[in-house]
Length: 172
Image (tube, rainbow, N blue to C red):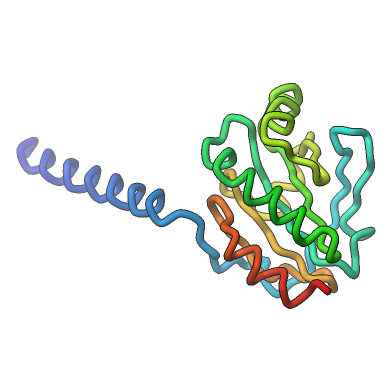
């Protein structure tokens, strides 16, 4: 009996490893999320620089909501893409909000400084924002339309192409 189990265990582990490798190599993906097409859950965030941001106050503008952590390698990879997106689309009406999850505030601040992030950034101190948005891990990015609907969700680092396709129809 043990000889029969070993090949089965090996095959199962190989399948799991192949699935994980496929996901990593594939990069960011839009996922079918039960949130899509539904109103975005309002939240309030105290930014690292002391400002209060509520999603409801951003109504009328497209919002890129990004979940990140300083310890996340893929978050480092997408940091420049998000900052470039903010600098390109912020003046045209878009709002970028970064939410640090499961991270020490000092580490988050060091990450923000290191990668030159200048948009609205704050900690998800209670973890409730991530829960409301069905967070699987970091990075994840949610695109919210000007009328407050969740239109897209990307798991993994968001790309320039994704930001462009999401934002261009909604900015001036």
